[in-house]
Image (cartoon, rainbow, N blue to C red):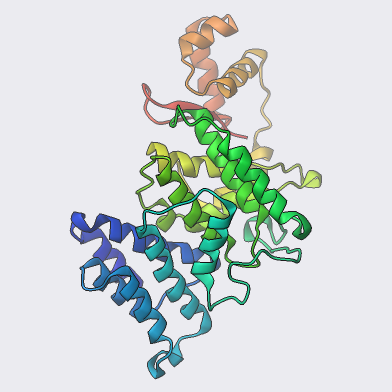
Length: 344
């Protein structure tokens, strides 16, 4: 109930307090990736910060002090973690400083989980597996403990060589998707990787000039994790390959203000298997040519398809309607400014 009250409060608070609202809603929303829920005290403290009664530092200190009092003893360890990490994420997101280095990523983990995990700010020295709901209990193959430092250095070096001169192009969005998915797959810490990655990515995108100022991390944090899992999971026996389309939709919504559906059930391997099983209709030569061209250029027009495929525009339209009816392609956005997508 208190969570619902806070959502209503956030929604109706003065727009001039936007940055503080965003910091807290993102911080609280990210706790969902590990099934954590903050306490009523955290919500009240967040409101006081948003209203200007407390600085972020004072809010963090109040939360830390709260868990030293008799009153907080009824709260369990997971609630304590949610409260402390939420206040620290909110403070970090309010700070303009940023360094694009593996050490800054490690420093974020240290600040978020100091006093919560013994290994806060330390690269793990053991291999890990995690049972994932989205994979029916299977696990992603995370980075090997003996090579985590090298993996981080390599990924950061590769990222620094990318040209962001066309920041809103399809190629750039795909690149961001790939970089973030690979950074998360390394999983350098024993716990808290997704929250640490999210905070780092938000600050990184802002440093590049992206606004990254909507509530997508707050409202879709579990989807974000599931999308990261699917971007790094392969199961040859079940015919499942790494699939970055879910994560790309997330970033297209964040950076391009698109409105792709971000539903967790879409990311589940059983759901995508069902979709694959349904696509058993016979594809004609012309329809396959249309699919191939859409894959190359999602913004291609029917007239361009007509010229390339070599059939009348009327027949292009008829074939595309058939492909849509069979769930093989779909239109995203308006007729003029939208794009096509091939559904696997």
